Each structure stands twice: as structure tokens, then as C-alpha cells.
Length: 120
Image 1 (tube, one colour):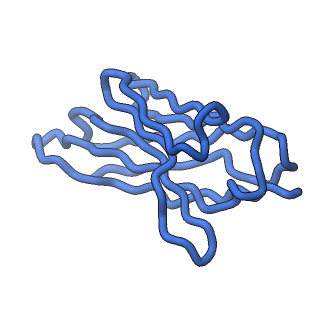
Image 2 (cartoon, one colour):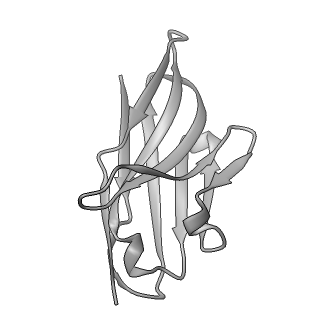
């Protein structure tokens, strides 16, 4: 069993900042790719950013230069620093972790989601 706990969402004015975190615990051997996705009302879930265990990072074009993804392998935690927020960033944000369990079985886990609302 692996549990993911997200935190850090909220309401912020345009131009403001928020920092999301997602901590994994439980039967973990290793966490490979960590990422953040988001889903706005009436839209499909989309990738925001991903980071490999080795630190290779990919961002969606819409957030490049404004968002920063990072990870702490010792804590099995991924972060998303969001700066210069825009109203179009309003969405539910979900972390996604590709975990290898202590039984050496790979699983894809999703966080419960945290709401980010950016007012204009």
C-alpha cells in the first residue's frame, strides 16, 4: 500500500505564487517519475510537469518559465513552485508517481487533487 498526500493549493490573485507538495509513504522501494497534472472545469486532464529520478524535467509550454518542479528522493516528495500565476492556471492539480513497491512491482499512483484558484 502506498499513500499520497497533496497540499498547498488555495486561492491567489493573478501574479501571485503557490507551492504544491505531494508526499508518498508506504511500501515503496523506489519512486521513478514524479509529475503534476491539472484539470480545469470542462476540460481534459493535462500534463503540467514531470521530473525523472535523475532530474530530467519536462514542462508544458503553458507553464514554462513560471512553474518549477523539484523532488526530494529521500522524502519521496515532489514539489511544484508556481509563480506569476494566471487565471487560466485555475484547476485541480494532481500529482502522479510511478512507484516500484517493495515487492518490486511497478504501480502508477495519483494524489487526491488540490484546488488552485487564480483570481483576476
